[in-house]
Image 1 (cartoon, rainbow, N blue to C red):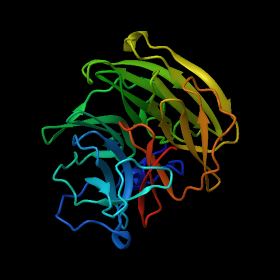
Image 2 (cartoon, one colour; image 1 turned 135 degrees about the vertical axis):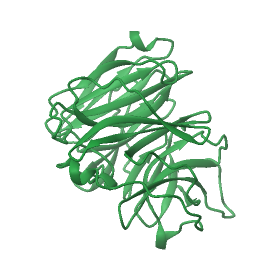
Image 3 (cartoon, rainbow, N blue to C red; image 1 turned 30 degrees about the horizontal axis):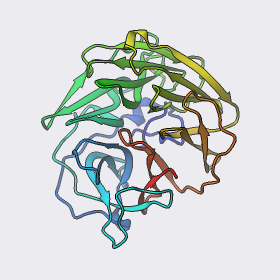
Length: 333
């Protein structure tokens, strides 16, 4: 199962054991100075819009020594004479604030997040036994974290909620992944859950089955709907939906294209006219561009990226790049 490092599986690897994966807990919050290269936490996920400030993102971090102790922090562009509010491909160096006093449930292991207004949504896994995890979604509202019921398919008895994105005016899209064996922690199938009413009701659509050992799905909202890329055994398949103006129950998931031997999708970053998928292929990060309907574009930039690439749900054309020593906020040119 593709999950973050504190659960034993980075976005670069495939989970082989839920017991080791879910051993880490969530630590409390302490006041610290802003983090720089020497003590940079691991960045797990990012989201925009939660604080209402254009110059701030919220990020999920973990202790690099324990690969656990997940906390939420604010991320801002580092102060410099040339500071810009609009990141470019060259990037803007960023600085982490101290942990926020927003503890997550102790039995919850987070993966990704998105914000809608003052509400923060965090996907992940709920540990229900030493060798079993169940996809879970946590909502943080008014400084309180609570679980939100997800429509987990009966065929996913062990798994994790991975990618998440706002969609439409009041919608949330969540990818649920896992397998039918309650004691086996791999991704063999992927499922899309949609809500039109901020998580009160849900409807679901299967994305893929028979993935053998999937790498996890990436998801982005576009001006036309949703864009998803799922990978299994090296083949990456792109799906799209037309959700704008269409209810969740009427949403149709369309398979657009497949590309063999492409590697693990790291992030999907949407712009007004295309979507960029960043892929880790044998240690090299590549960017491939697609139309909003999921068709590959002939030209994709030869972009040199280092470390992990993280999309920023809620901010079009923006991603984070971190190599464990620095964080840059980058934008698509």
